[in-house]
Length: 115
Ligand SMILES: [Zn+2]
Image (tube, rainbow, N blue to C red; front, side, top):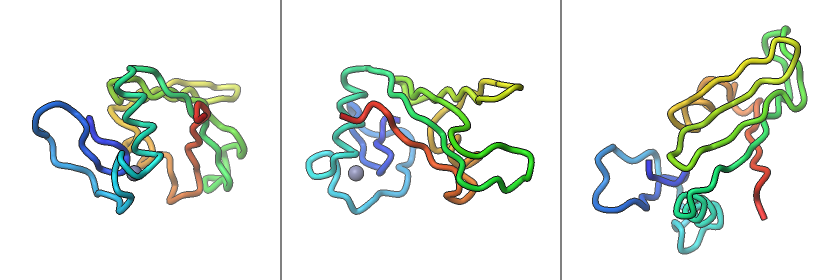
């Protein structure tokens, strides 16, 4: 951070961390996703999301809306898992959470604050 999830730098100065893969979306000037993320970062607002699991690959998990989460203005992410043994996980960035829980696209992260 601060990069948008599409890999566009929007912080002050020069990046000190290597950029994530950059999407060909045109950046904040052209892309609504980049622009929305930039606005949330600049305004320092938390951003809510839900985690939906389409397929239970382990045979032990539920499907449907399995967790709720917040991305904080510093880019870190908190996920609260639903269910009888609910738990909370905190990640340095959304990409880490998606890497662990994305299951190759079978689990979707859905933003709920989109206007
Ligand atoms: Zn973009």
